[in-house]
Image (tube, rainbow, N blue to C red):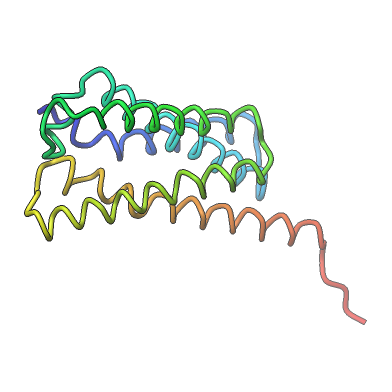
Length: 173
């Protein structure tokens, strides 16, 4: 198993952060605009591209992915998981086109619920089945559990920042 196949869950969000920082600097954005651009790239690339990549693995490298997770090869569930992951990835990538926070919130919540549940599934497999396969007990589990929470915090911060900016400076009477 290559090092990339172990650390890709962390690499793709880092790439998203780099793209966002470049975008923010080129456009000279500040405050909520910068936070919104950072969040957009995290959802679209960090989440969307990650899920699309995972989906392609489940669909086109099914036996290798199954082995890396500690699953038996040849399971028909690989196709279902692959299609599901690819569909979620496409929804994440659509956040580049649909830039309203309602769409972003729905995307993060939908993917996040699945992701956190999958993370708990990884933990269950570790504790109950003793499954410490690299893509069960490794970076995928941590990203599944914590990345959606990070995105929810970013969404909350964005909404808070926007509401502060729209309220303007406080007036004293």
